[in-house]
Length: 143
Image (tube, rainbow, N blue to C red; front, top):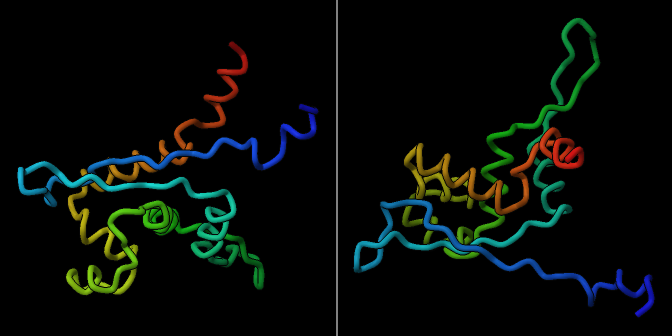
């Protein structure tokens, strides 16, 4: 196999979906929390989500100048919603049962316990590969 052909898509490793039970308030008939399925979000999808969550804010003391600001909480909520496969957060019947109209609102309605939501956020960030900081990578490279 030539060096170049190793870069072909056919040789790319497919990332497997993961599972996690984000809340104890949704259980099966045996009282076990329901397990949700998550997929990996691509870099392009993440970029599109970040763009949708970015606004221009005026620069203090500089008329007609703006700087971008990402609404971090909205970005995280949209990232989680985009990564959920099961349950289908886009299902109108499921949204109607919670009285919401968007996948992001459904997510926070289903996982409405603050601690559970924070744990879900941490899980998704780890699952998406966002668990190491730049400083962690520098330290790893030094060792």
